[in-house]
Length: 64
Image (cartoon, rainbow, N blue to C red):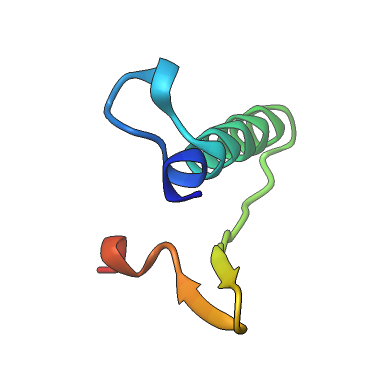
């Protein structure tokens, strides 16, 4: 599931659900900002819940 969620490389053709969704969100916000001058703040979480209720933060390796 990690490959599906995160993707497998730098190519836009191999982006997973999370990077694709974030790209779409930021594009939509930028378009709205251009039209209205609005400002936005974005936070995102991505958790995997595995059998046995084991929870993994899929974005932890990318945290700064």
